[in-house]
Length: 634
Image (cartoon, rainbow, N blue to C red; front, side, top):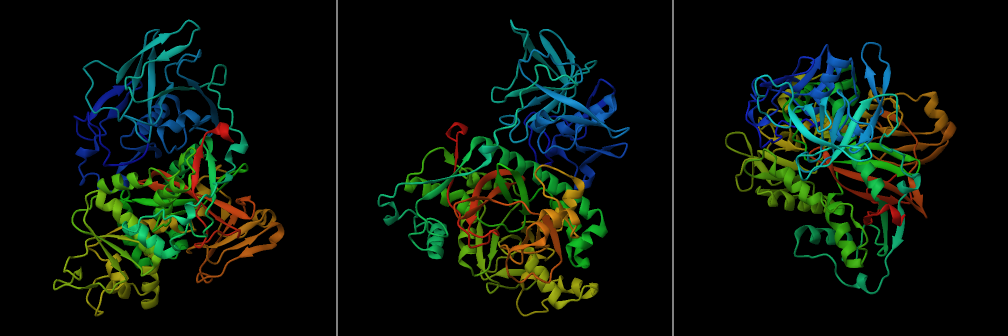
């Protein structure tokens, strides 16, 4: 499978991680990827999982994508580019020849195609079942009229029988029209087909682009017949009671328009899901790239004495991110990411609960809720976490943060984890051994926070100058210098593990956007971004953003030739800025619509929207219900 996750389970595991299972044609070794048997001393950080051949990155040990790329390079001299999921390979159109950096065409053929598979073809499975979330890829090595032989990694972890040079045989059949069908041995998995390096597209999968109109949202209204006068949130549920306290008992959403909702097509939501998964992988790659290049890390304005903590967090807790949020612009003009809120994002309750309850109460039941699975996926993420003991939820004394925290608490507790909520820092004090404890004397060991990491960094910046490494280090030692623990003592203490991890500072910082553009130039989901204002951006229009900012503060929008279209005030004006290509939100009536998608453990977890009359969508914007409906209804 394509995503890196050392906790990944495989019920067929029998050989220790890294054990040689067999040799594929071309003398390419295949290894066990049973992550439950990893030697953590031997593989102590994320970097040790990276697989290289001739200094070319192949993937993560020992994933199916890593093997496919390695086999192609050794046998063919070319590789396919990075993909978020194995099933994404079915949509690739080229491979890159390493020797001269040229490209060769790829074509995909659905299972049952009249273009039969060939040795060296890539066999692709859709996500789901045995290959949940990621899909799967294998290399076809032999083709017969009634079967094929394949080589693969991360399907099972058993040593091959002596003399065998393939992983599995799959039965095949040729139908009366000449179509070639391969049996999928898993009842709950779909075999998409095969990918061949060929210049001929005859009989290939029809990948005609979807109609552009399917990427426009539709605004609809429910018929109001007294629903708004009846309660639709349950005050016995703590999170819903806090939501009502924040916005009032009659509230549908933040603006209180009780009859409007929006619809998104199945095609568009599928694209949002694909973009979410792919972009998360890209942001992770960019984060790793930044942490390997100090000149780039300088641009993030993180105090240098904390760099070692950043590296430690990334190396040890790369796969411990629970959740984040992407902000997109989506319309018939395309799908473009604005930024990734990987650190202390918001709007989860609106996506995972409010929009569904509103739809049910007000009678908007066509299609399905775009966030219906978010809460259950959060529960699973917490079940898979390493939390043992009490988890403390830290938040500011703010109504929005309160219902946000209570919604997350419900997922944490359903995962079987005991948790306590602490508002502000007044409930914390120093224990006898120098640890931080709550009012009941329970040590703070595990934390989920609504505070942004930047808030703790601002505390450091206030007390220590940038070049005073000793004073910064002293600040982080929990020495009881202050009568009561501060936020920085709690979040950056050596004995406290915080969600989201410290490294999420990097992908959340706008400085990552120009770096992404340099790593993936002209990528269809990215906007041209730069640390300097280029002539190209001046001419096309651009947005100036502080590298660290929240809630749409201190943003300026310029049209072509630097005509100021809109700006917001805030507290981040003095921070360094980046410049991002102007790509306008879809506008319906008087509202601009921003798409939001949520990641859970690095994968798509649900979607919602924010709308606002302003070009810059800020914290006070409306979050109406979003329904996913069939393409035909568009």
